Image (cartoon, rainbow, N blue to C red; front, top):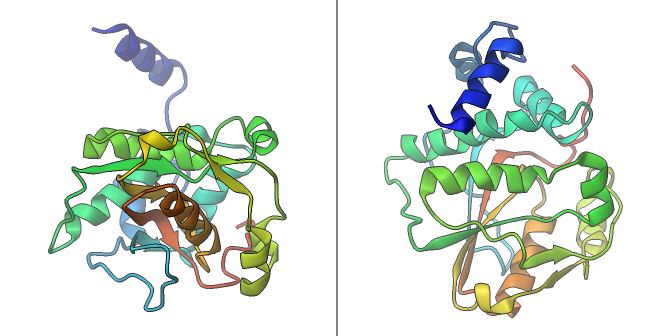
Length: 231
């Protein structure tokens, strides 16, 4: 048995996994509770796009109380990094349920970045952890040193759609431009609400020479739904 698998086995033995919903032992999200989330079997991007994102894939509706709770356990205290795998599996299940399954073999993955103080506070970038899982599933490269967030902005959840667009302007830059020049990109984040963050990231990527940018998120939220209430 490889060292990594031995470590994982011992951790599971000492600290068994429990479903965050039903508390059943075995995984952080059991199959019965996963079924509650009603993973979409159709591709239905928002009817109205800006000029920047080429497409969008999302697995579940954020209004579901369980997904809202799981995402907030992942993003906020207690910062459960291990939820990356079960949450990313919702996206991969969505891909597999589609009648016309997408082919992303010639794409690269780029996570929506965090500003370094927020990254230090959380300990990890939730979008990057999701992208790592998707990279393994799709067998495509993950690039995390190109799209950089250079300053912190107000939390988007507190703002209107118009305020979100203004709030996110000029907070992202590109480094190592040669890695994205002419590339097709899957831009990964956790929740899509008004699309302001993804649209801004997409604009920056395309100005730097990216050929195409498709958004990939766990959940789609209506404006106002992404304001978390503990349940």
